[in-house]
Image (cartoon, rainbow, N blue to C red; front, top):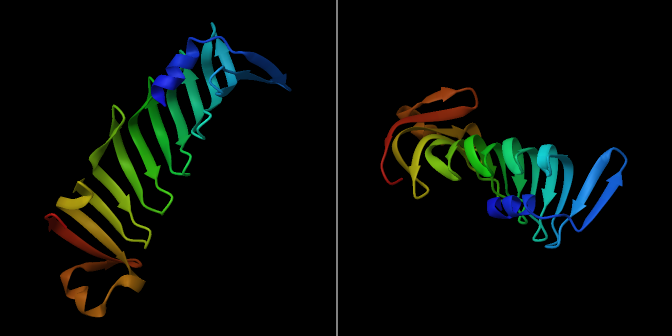
Length: 171
């Protein structure tokens, strides 16, 4: 997605339309950009839609995604957060269509291992994960409806969540 967005900034649009106060640019690869241009490149708030269904909505500068934005994929998963020069960089959240989510830092387009993981059943894990397994010190919060009464000796209640805290290994 990043390289395609950058490539568009160097292309001349094949069609330019004005819709009210907005300008819509169509490109030869089927991509559509709607938003501002400064000195011939995307700048300001904008929306960039690719023919494969991927769409970016957010801040642009110098023809790239820079600032805050939302990148939605064809399967309806999405990343929402900070972008630098067209890639996820900084605080962000990725949500999968099945309900899993990760909130934390992204470095050069890659999710860091430390963050907050939310599971479809309502469980929340805060800590480090390696290869999608809990690893190292962390905290697992289990909703009341999923918690068995005999396990309450191993942690503590925090509102509607039972909290396990400690060292996790390949769990």
